[in-house]
Image (cartoon, rainbow, N blue to C red; front, side, top):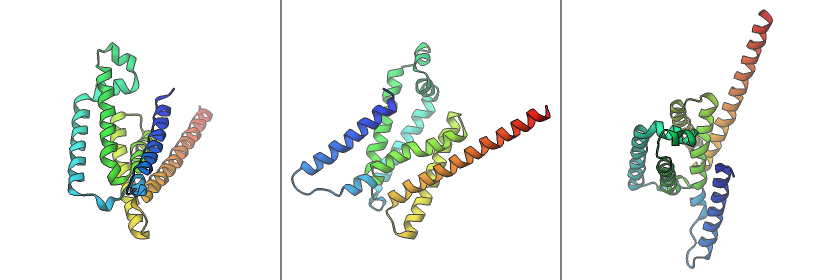
Length: 197
């Protein structure tokens, strides 16, 4: 099976088991909406410090191991021939993703965490295949979507998590339309060039 399929199945299973166990636990049942969409208004200084620490750790890991991470991400067999510790790098990446999810669930909720981990990168990947540019593009689209979502949330008095996800999806649609129009323009220029030649 493809890795993304396995991740999707395990994520769905984890969510289902979590909800079942929450409702089976005797006593007060917490508000599941806060787990799904988070509550940015409850972010405390400890949460910010933990997220800052994770950001610094992630930057250090990528600064030290960028080439091995690239090799393992795109071609594990080639990475093994270069004597790169494939299992160590894979587990390190999984640990960083797990830490990001755990630290962000309370802040933004599980659905927004999944959106943050997928949509900005997908948008950046539409315009570049260079991994470094993709990292910075993902950060830029993540910040832009968050800012727009928070602004919309403030203006219409809606939950911030939902408006940020909606903003990401709108950015994705706009980016896809721009990508398709760029492809159409290149094709027209190619056809004109062939006619002239």
